[in-house]
Length: 416
Image (cartoon, rainbow, N blue to C red; front, side, top):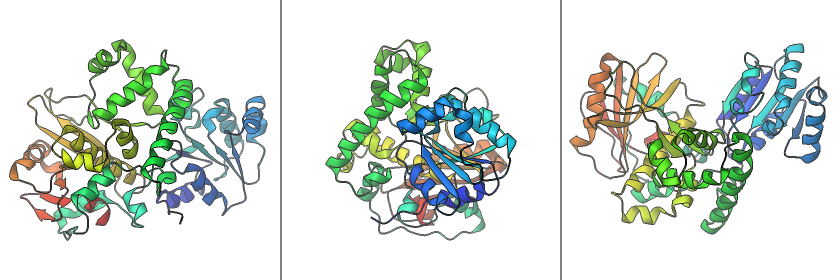
């Protein structure tokens, strides 16, 4: 199987040339170790992994000595969250010698969530987020939809996507992006995902979070998958899972800290009190969400108007845009919008100048004028800050739909 080139590789190499510590952060099995190996092969480097019992014991016994074991080159440390005290030793070593490219560390948990976390590396480290494969990486294309979207008002050409049908999009929306499952059979993928969920929840999430009842993490993840890309209501989760309402945020944080879920905050800068502030939550990997809900592309196709089908497609689009943030030429953040009158837009991308691209996601192959109502509302709210409103759908035609409004195939995310 050919190695897929990761778009984050160029950024990581540049970071190694400019910062003493480079952190590659992401879920287990998204390819962090492979990327480390590629980066280290071009430098004088030593690689150690804290999944190894010997290295883990050595790091715990003498963190300072462990951090100083390769002073003249690059020390790459995989799964650094396994020995939190090592982060302080890495900080001290970097303070003694601030040359770029001293350390390359990876973490399968949010380092801010563990004792001695990444705040101790402030001013010394740069973090690169790594996720599963993007569609652009799979097709060997540099996918940067934000740059395309921000240029649409300047007459950027519209391109149809005629070789991807709705069932193809649904297949993508239930396919895992973990590198190891790239060519796996459905049965193999199910077994792998079952083991993955068990290990991450019982080991990583339970150990890092310290939640009182770790056995409640799986039911919460199942609930989030069933309501994929929906607004999260803590009281609802509390009733469904018999967890005290005050404890729900800690359980949610436990899933987020090991990158099992993706949280989309509400957008509402200076828009008044009628904006709903609850976040949307989606399972981070499409294939994992499909496994947890027991659905496949044929099941979504047979009930295309269901909430589950819409949520899976929306979560797929959100994941693609989240991945592209790592290498996009546009520095943007993602939000969702809904007000108390029920007007909503699935995704709001906002750049550092607070310019807005609003995105609606539809699992249908046709679009009508009413599908743009939410985009038109955000256009009124944002005023001059509104750059474009885009309805992404499973059809093939790319067409304008009015003042700064466009209908685009979902494939435009990686085919522009």
